[in-house]
Image (cartoon, rainbow, N blue to C red; front, top):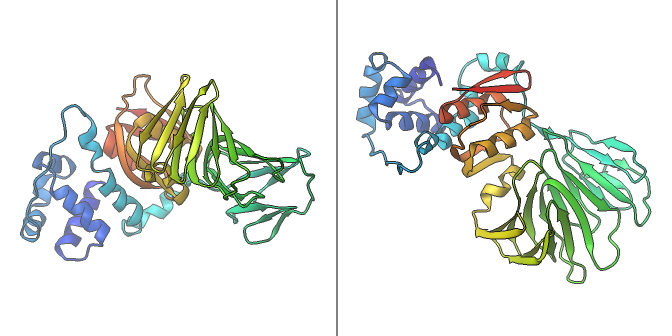
Length: 364
């Protein structure tokens, strides 16, 4: 947020014309220490506005951040700033539309369906998902493939970077695939087990069937369920595989150590790696927000945040080898242009982000 934008918001606040999102930004700025205020806008330019705001809003006490989190103070503003950037952006100025022409758009509904004979179908970006029965249809009932599959045929649904898609499996189980992910599944579940294979990240809502457990194989683990809702993050470039249970229960087995098995209940997460499983209690909203169009962070390392952005916007970050893992938290929209997301990162990390095509250079 540059000087002219802040001054305009202050004037709107004094006049009582701010939206709720804009009001939140002004009040967050006003409650910063004076030094931080002056760093954003010369005090001489806003004396009258600040005096008017002071009459409207008593200065609040600013909570101190523990000294053992050296970077956290800057990150505290992410929730407020993101509300302004992502919910009230249309109120900024007329230049935004022109900037978007050269900007990078967020991901969308993009996926490829691979049939049993190896042929591929690029799925419609106007649709959100498919249903697999004797043939394959979109969620609205329109046809994707009328080909009748054999009993043991295996199909694959894959999303690229910048893509997401849903699938309803033959047993009624729903799966949401995040960007750069794939799911292998049979055209019909036979035998005593319903088994699929996941690469990347997927959210599952498993149809209950006490006679046939549902099994998901992913990097370094096997997850067994009867009927439940859970998320698996099994990207190859992440340090470990994380399974988070939303509803019901699952059993996680470490494939490198089959004797290590853990049963997870709602709001528990299993992290599999290095030959063992660690289980902890979590707020599940931070791990399934992507399904609802949000980046959600709870003290997540900056390097992890950058990898999520790379997958969703199909970009690559180039940064110093010794980038500090600044903890980030807050909720950001996955529906905005890349430039707006980079604005938030600049405000909260101390880094400058310069884009050249789909490469983003970081510097301090």
